[in-house]
Structure formats: structure tokens, C-alpha cells
View 1 (cartoon, rainbow, N blue to C red):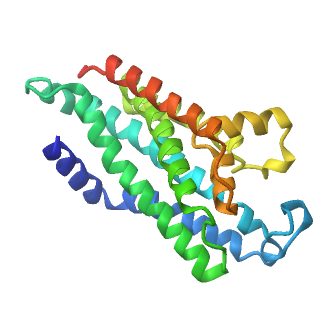
View 2: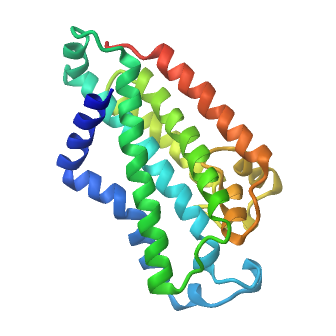
Length: 241
């Protein structure tokens, strides 16, 4: 298992352009939004906060979903398309171990990306650090696990990179909509906000932890259940070919 993780980590680093973009894209988006003076002005619709303050939880959602849904399925499907998985089928390695290696490496990259975004927000724009760090950590781990598990299901079922990209993009856009990335959550209908609270990556739990409140255990439990169910489905359905 450690050898698989090591190899996947090397491949991640070697893919410099795509890996770097996955790591810094949320930070670049933060810098672009922060350059707009109006978005740095406190507003009543954001509870007296600035837009960039209230948008931090959505940036974490974007980070987890971008790497978990846009990168992981495409990489695994490309392995299948190029015959890498066919070669691995001649070894004693269980197929699920490849999925675990992908999750460990890419989830570590997502955590690093989140930390960089938080640091830049604090240094450049004076955004408060999370007021409930433990709650934020739980929300990131469980929300990220649920998101990555959905990506692994796509990776397990997609026959090629093109199909994986299409399926992953559809799920990505849905999660971004529910997560308040496209529109601020206060502009969304109540039912959409509720769905976004329970679906990975869990924008409501992230927002609560950022403002200093312990995340609702029901949100965390549902995201943990999603990760367990989707991860099991991915492990049971993944085949070398």
C-alpha cells in the first residue's frame, strides 16, 4: 500500500501543470474576487461581513470538489484507457488499493490547497481564521471523504477518460450549485440550501465551523454515510478492465 501511495504521489508531482492548477486555483479565484472593492465592503445580506469572508466556506467546497471530482476520475479512467490497469491486473494487487492510493494522495493535495487558501485570505485580505478549528477539520475530512468517494465511483464505472470527465463535470456542477459557489446561498431557495447542508462537501458545516459554532452532527453524519456507501460501491464495482 505504501508503495502504491509513493508511486501515485510521484505521478501527481510529475504532472506539474494540472497538479499546480488544482492546488492554486481556489487561491487565484480568491485573489480575483478580493480585487473587487465592493466585495471587500461589509454588507447586511452577508450578516455584516464582507463577501470574501462569507465566501471562504464555498472556496473550501470548490477545492474539495475540484480535486475529488475533476482530477481523480479522469486520472483513473486514463489509466484504464492507456492500458495501465490491464498491466496491473497481472500483479497480485487488489483493485481497491489503487483507489485508496488515489484518495490518499489527492486528498492530501486538497488539504494543502485549503491551507494555502486560508493563509492567503488571512495575510492579503485580513479574513478571520476559522473560529472552530476542530469543527472545520471534521467538516473538511468528512465532507472531503464523501466528495472523493463519489469521484471514486465515477472512476470505477467510467470506461474511458472522456466519459469520466463528462460524468464528473455533471456531478461537480450540481455540488457547486448546492454549495453556494455559483450563487450566494441566501439567494437560493430554502430546499436547495437544505440539500447543500447535507450533501458533500458540506458547506453549512464548514460555514458554522468558520464562524465559531460546532457543525451540526447530522450534517457530518450524513456526509460520513455518503463516504461509506459510495466508497463501498467504488471498491466493489472497480475492475481492471
